[in-house]
Amino acid sequence: MPLILMVILAEDLILMRPPGLWTAIVILATEFLRGRIALTRELSFVVEWLLVSGVMLGMMLVYRLILGLALVPQAPFGFAIVQVLWSIAVYPVVVALSRLALDLRKPATGEVDDFGRRL
Image (cartoon, rainbow, N blue to C red; front, top):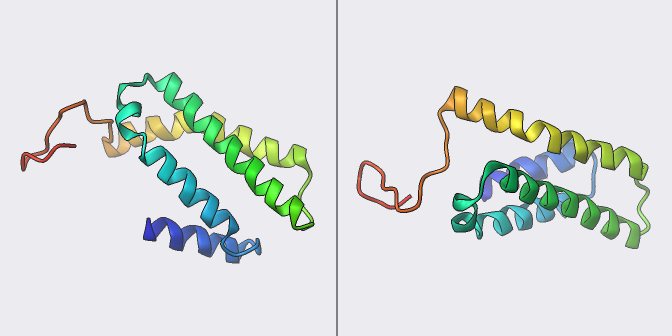
């Protein structure tokens, strides 16, 4: 989590967004997904993709809602939707590249590593 915090906070500062707002939303979404790790092990890729897509849409809506309540100028809604839709569309490509190039995969239920620790 500290690495996510530093990277997204730096992104907030570089892109001149309200510092910390997007960072907090990303960390909350990450923890939400991490808390459901046991559930996602059993899901097919399509269901996992839908779950992540819903989280991405929720993150964008919460961000826009908070900025709207604070009366902060925002990019048009259509632009934000296009960004999220592209992120959702590219998700399978990133997963495939992670699997092929980095040999990452979801551990099976009850799988252990070389030291006998549960994954």
